[in-house]
Amino acid sequence: MKSEWDEWAKYYDSDLNPWLNLNEDSILKNIDFAGKSILDIGAGTGSLALKIANKSESITLLDPSKNMINIAKDKLKEFKNIIFINEYFENFKIEKKFDIIIISNVLHHIDYNNLSLKIFSLLKKKGNIVIVEPLYLKPSIFIRNIFYNNFKRYGIKRGYRMLKIIFNPRVFSHLIKEKYLKKDDIISLFNRKIIKENIINDGFYLLVLKNEK
Ligand SMILES: C[S@@+](CC[C@H](N)C(=O)[O-])C[C@H]1O[C@@H](n2cnc3c(N)ncnc32)[C@H](O)[C@@H]1O
Image (cartoon, rainbow, N blue to C red; front, top):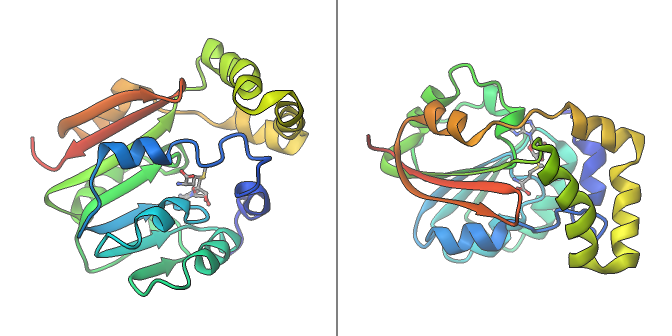
């Protein structure tokens, strides 16, 4: 399947990606994946899956970009408990319920109509949803992250290379088109019990919900 994300796939695991593996440790700190069945929606190149594959029961890795999925398949080839699905979440169908559903940096790409109903139809009773969503639309956070944090975190040389990528017209037009959900919109979209919520890495909202009211 062709996707606008195919082009991104080749940069995704490189140190030119300003967001390289940025939120994974925060996700790992906030939820225990041991023995759980997991659905990772918009899993990208499968970096989070790689960190939890040996402890979780199974991971269903869904992404509409064939290039992203192919990289994930290669990274995870030694694991037998991973299912790869090259599909948009909107078209995804499966007869299974999961313990944990991850939606990391993807929520704003998915059609919100019926989204929560579909998520709950795939989630076990008392299962968890883990959401990470950027808050970059707030101009002050965007500027601090893109400029100040990139240089502080990665040094002048790499920070400069990253700026060049961000301001590459194709990447920049993609970034400014994105409309991130606000914290309160996410909470009301799902309307479930909040287990944890944190602002992580200075610009991302992490929310863990439990499938009970
Ligand atoms: C910013 S990446 C996030 C990858 C990974 N979850 C992470 O946190 O690093 C967004 C991913 O969402 C996927 N995506 C875009 N639209 C989607 C949709 N409608 N359903 C499922 N995945 C989607 C893209 O192909 C891309 O791999």
